[in-house]
Image 1: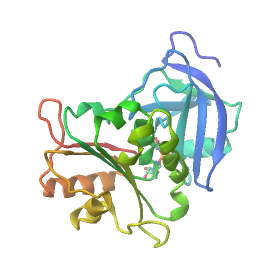
Image 2: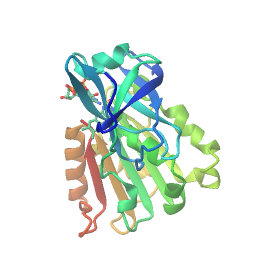
Image 3: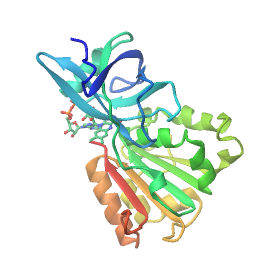
Image 4: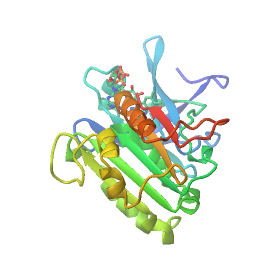
Length: 258
Ligand code: FAD
């Protein structure tokens, strides 16, 4: 069943699939020339299923200028899309909705000198894309990425984040980034071992970042499980920060990753 030209999606090819752990995969698909997205946005990916389709949202990991589209997926037990991903291989066909969506966009902050990106699990995906954009390194004096997971084997992007130092578009700005891995169910291989809201409230996140968080300079982006997003937002409200809205500027942007 090929997509008709007027369809809202295109049929793409899976280029590669990497299984990092039994539950974590990354994969890339072909990118149609017409596909546009902003770093921080998500795609809708799908498969034909019987007479219909299955569709789910996935944040783009790749840079805006990349030739292919990369994604990071957590495979959920008994999840219909996860089951499809578990058996997906290079050469398979995957459906890509023509429109990328999402408002987790750092350019929505008109000011601020420090960008603090807080995420759990697959919520790191949009930030990996954002960190591939040269503007972000020029625009902010400091970049902080705190990735909270349960166990250390879920920190699969440490090498990729370290490699940003050699990225030709990052260059002299590389030292601006502080990466803070956070573990919640294990105490090895990370600097911090509590949930992000608690680490904000007790000051250890700012200490690990190396600077105080202020309303004047610090901007926060949150992405991950709905509970973390809610609790982290509440913690930030308690510290005097506010949601950013286009007409009422604030310091917080957030997105529920599922
Ligand atoms: P579903 O029936 O869709 O989900 C079953 C349950 O699994 C959910 O109710 C939830 O409790 C849990 N769950 C769903 N996704 C996750 C997850 N990522 N980590 C932990 N628990 C989860 N998923 C990704 O893996 N990578 C992404 O980049 C990503 N980006 C998203 C962006 C947005 C805006 C939204 C709304 C969701 C995103 N998701 C992402 C979730 C994704 O759309 C699917 O829900 C997920 O892959 C599971 O699909 P499923 O059909 O297997 O199970």
